[in-house]
Image 1 (cartoon, rainbow, N blue to C red):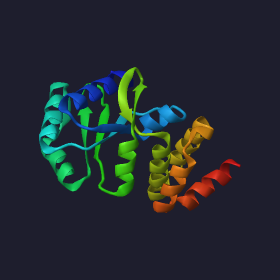
Image 2 (spheres, helix red, strand yellow; image 1 turned 135 degrees about the horizontal axis):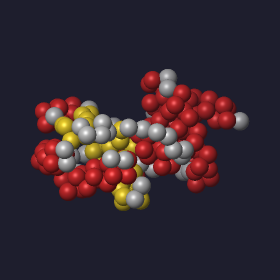
Image 3 (cartoon, rainbow, N blue to C red; image 1 turned 60 degrees about the vertical axis):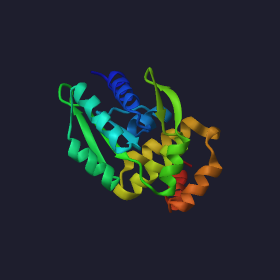
Length: 185
């Protein structure tokens, strides 16, 4: 099964379960920037307990391995759990939306777009830039910075700079952003 098929299946299961979600990670940054290979899909979700049970059942029905207890632990802890397609090895990381102001804002700003042939909720380019900058700061990953640079190149003047500036300051990422801008100059 290829990414478009996996994505379509996951979106169908999420929507049938009634779970608010948004596609993030390398799938979203590839959509907004430069494509790169991946074998996983990152999805931020904001479910209630009953909807989470419907998601787990839907994933089981679609032949994914998922641990119900791990899913409920993630709901309680606002952490993450994953589902794995045993036949293809595709991994879906379900990340529970954090309760912090930025996470709430990015979730509210998600956009419903066509992604690889599937209409899905996806994080905006500005929010993906901020998330990738946070991840780069936490891990030292140059790949995250490459993703940011590609998204900036593709979006260009369409980026909401005022929104970026607000959250760069709030998240303590202004210096990282400046270094990235200077690298590209």
